[in-house]
Amino acid sequence: LGPFECVKNEFIDDVHAIDGHFFKDDDGTIYLYFVRFNDGNVIHVAKMNDDMSGILKDSEKFLLKAELPWEISSGFKVIEGPFVLKHNNKYYLSFSCNHTQSPDYAIGYAISDNPMGPFIKYENNPILFKNDLVVGVGHHSFFYDINNKLMCVYHRHNSPIQNYPRMVCLDEACFEKDILKIKGPNL
Image 1: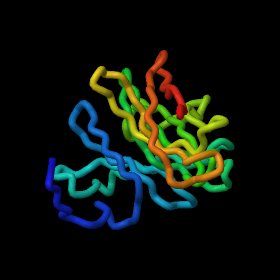
Image 2: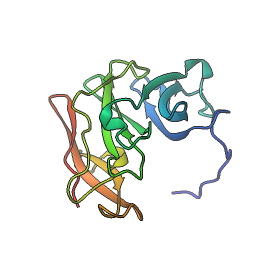
Image 3: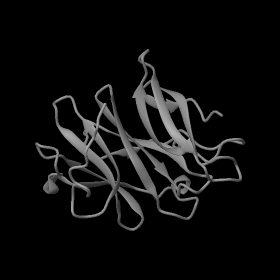
Image 4: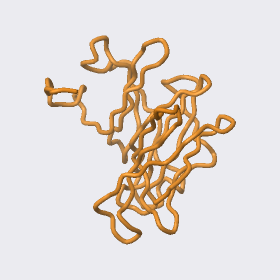
């Protein structure tokens, strides 16, 4: 409930990065998934140190880059907004691709047996993408609501012809036979 105080106004590493997402595994190990700027945006992971003040630099590992046609249709090599879910002992690393200003901004995921990868991209990506009324869907997170229903929150463009102001959306998500699905986008 706060009040909160910023004790360190910098990234927890000396190299600039964005879109940090913490994931705590069943054994208590905490991982940070984040985006570096190497030949476009790329996703990395690292283990956190014991007091959560930084990453264990020797553990940092490159995971994914934008390279498939649906991921770079905007002309930008952007993969960002990593978010990890664990389901049936598999790690689902979801991400957004294309530039946030592109109507083709969309969400996909990759799966691994280990939180440090390697991750294999789902062959039917993207799992959330534009339709006739809603475009630019991406940069998301998941949570379980009060009824234990998996939900996805993300942003989208204001309209098919206007990027800003972006709108926040909420759609139901689920696992069907170990396939992650988002039931949207909806208005």
